[in-house]
Image (cartoon, rainbow over all chains, first blue to last red; front, side):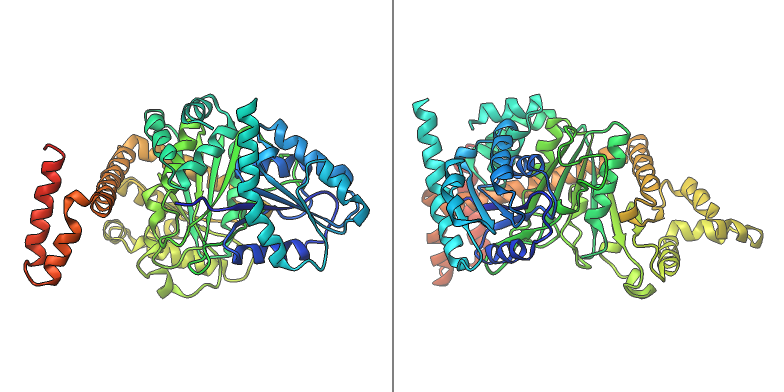
Length: 145
Length: 350
């Protein structure tokens, strides 16, 4: 049996805008993924702990508050602190993100950034491609180490 | 993670190992079966509380508040929350976790070391649970949780699988979901060890409560006790004291508890009822009985699954040929079954 792809859709920090996150969650459901939605106002620690306990393949963080440069790396670090392996999890960021910060986010370990107007199929295809790829990379990295 | 690492991790209380073990089991990986084999002897200590009821009655909110209450009482709590998986796409929106309290209370359930929460898709299975929910409960049991709460999908009238895992089954209702005929229908309203009328601040809660109690009294043994009740006892009926008397005669009469879960009202009483039911089940020997019945059914199902799997995959058993012979009218289905069973038993050297 093929493993079902599990996705955590998360809202972090003081940010009440979750229409986008809910729409994405709904369409990912229709793409055949198992989607866990965190609800609003989670701390980076809570999101990271949920990612570990739910053993998700993808963490999608939605931010409209402008705090992405501060909060996203925290989520990634806490996943590691709680025993998870961010190397094998696809980390996505969505919402209001200035384009000139895409590269900075990617340098922090984010795999993809999706801003309003992105066709949902692009996100779905990205997830389907990246989940096995990251797992393979993580395996190789571990084998070397 | 390797099987060894997962088993050791679970027994040492490593949440990452538990999470990965659940993934293996849920996806039917061979490693999952191996993990289950090794942890079995460490199970059987946790009290398993099932929470079921129609969609939107407040199951997840009740679970969240109960978790807080049990944490106050020093218990470690594992939660498995099942939501429906689509029969069309296989996808699911698992939305139980978000009811777990976060910032609005001083008890951070999401980060509490004594709490573990796992969302599960039913993956198209009817009955209210996923196929592997029972195994996930066992993994949490081996991990060392005192209480494991299993929340079903928003159940329909006939979805009663929760009794296959729960030591204490709670059926949650809310006001204005139908009249006393609805409450007396077979199925989900037969399975409660405890009944909850949530959203009790809405109009009609007393009516629902009264109908539930009347339904519970329409039990043969209960009726016998009631028939001996004189007029002088009417006050006892009114005050609910009669329930205590019925309990003495019968052992357990499911209590009906009114709650307003989002405000935490009635939750302490509900937790008390769960602990009382646990004591009752243990002292009466019914817990052992219930678990034994369940295990015998589980073993039976596992054997059936294994036989099906072997017939489908092991060509030397001649299942395909036998089907063809039945199709061609060379043999009747009953004789075919007898012959296949003979082969199966011989194959395994019995």
